[in-house]
Amino acid sequence: MRLVLNLVWLVVSGFWLAVGYALAGLLMCVLVVTIPFGIASFRLANFVLWPFGRELADRPGAGAPSTIGNVLWFLLAGLWIAIAHVLAGVALCLTIIGIPFGWANLKLAAVALFPLGKEIVASDRDRRVTD
Image 1 (tube, rainbow, N blue to C red):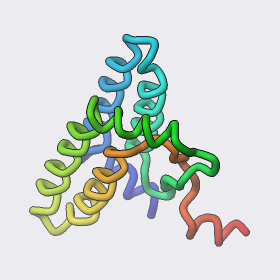
Image 2 (image 1 turned 120 degrees about the horizontal axis):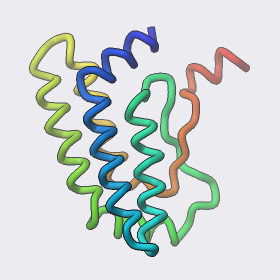
Image 3 (image 1 turned 45 degrees about the vertical axis):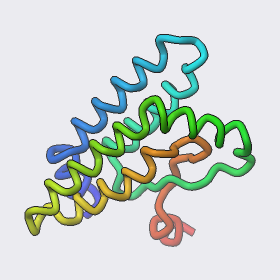
Image 4 (image 1 turned 180 degrees about the vertical axis):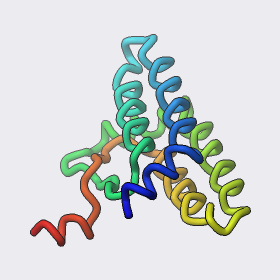
């Protein structure tokens, strides 16, 4: 089921959102100071391409530097990418089939605002099955 969800997601919004994250990552890598933001953007582009079956969890030990980075990320790129997620989510929620994908976009909007200090992990349901 995850494969089907991920494939439909890729077609309806995942590819274009990943392109947006990749472009933001390239812009962030122009300056040496913002390279960590570019790396975070590329990591999120990977996550947005294939999100079902994975989730973002708080990284242990991420403290004040990630908080400061999140504030800078919000100002430089986070707000604009979150707006793209919200617009895609609202558009997808206009159809019954698109509601799960629209809801996923709305969840990703919150992640797009403050991504630093997070890591991509397998979802809880997947971990319970393998344990």
